[in-house]
Image (cartoon, rainbow over the protein chains, first blue to last red):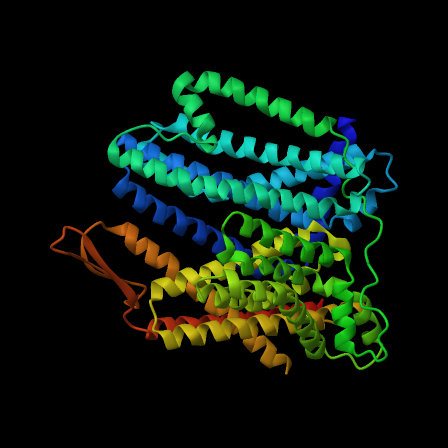
Length: 478
Length: 95
């Protein structure tokens, strides 16, 4: 493996990221960029302030600080797994994007390692943002008194968890290639990651209870794999823990490099399902264009596997939440139906009709996929809220993700568009949520603002489709 | 129709900007003084009230005290964004 090839590839992705994503679509407008930046700063300040207020009132004794940091450390492990699953889900569709590298004189190992570097970078940015408020508040309240605990609980734990998950993914990839089932890699890999998440979710629930009991009874009896590094740090100090951490990191990175990896090399993008229609309508064409896509099928299988895993771990109440992953897949609906749109451009193309077809097809697929889980849910779900909430989330989620896919089309399944669009769409949603909390308006006003918000989403989506049509036809904007 | 789209876009941008301003001024108000009692911010439009309870805790209340400054901000910003969008269009055309 040559370092300079990886360096050039990473540079290529960065150039692509800056030119094709950060200067594309709505982000081309400087007002939007400034607004996004201000929103982001306000959001970060708000979260940091809330955490600071909470910490300054509660974190008075060393026992409480350690209890909180140990509990938070288990949360960080869970967040690391969630971020890794999200990135694996996004990067599982990366083959089209990586096609631009096929003519380069590089090996697939170099290519995959460069993708790994980018995945790692994005993961660490997200984890940094998640833990930023806690670290800042802790430093403001106690200065650098607990800096060693912070380093071990946040930095070391998240890095090691992330690298271990990557090693697991590499092993799954190697096993899939060895057993000649490379096409099943993404499904198996994501299922294994969900399995790991379920194990650690159960473990963290037990851990929090144990730590709370320890705090109340002034004992130190809780033992957990999630606290391995913390206990090691308590017994042997920071220096020795750092040595163990560094050697583990080197060992894990060496394993990641050494294990042969053939992922991101899929050749087929579609499977011919649901053939033999006597009549075909536009809406059918939209549904089929999404359902025949190999990535949608992977997500469907993954949804069912995730539901089974949740049931195995006695978390049956949440099985309907797995359909959120299908709602997330709506982000690809625009690019999946791009060929149909190019045909429609030649005739009487209407952006609002296109939008209706997009949304209706996505909702149809989501509801269709959810039927087996819904039937199963009647037997295993206890609270009626666990039926209602997932359906509300996926219905409105589909609206948001279809818009994200239109505003930042992930052409060639490029993962950076998806990550950016999710970030760009989430920040205003958080800002609106926080502002509504402060304003403390009555129910009627809140409902009115939410309706306005969804109206705006629909309006932006249709406007986006109109702009894209003009772009394709080389028409003037404005 | 084109103007309607511009009005809508300006209104959306103005609403989000107003929400950002309100959230920022709310946080500045919280940071500015540690005293208990009734405090208002952004021309008296949002308030924050903390009263100590007999159980030695604080009861917090916050919300909108006067909606007029908020509405005025949304209107002024909408007009400003609309003018900016029109200026941008004129500049693009002349270049």
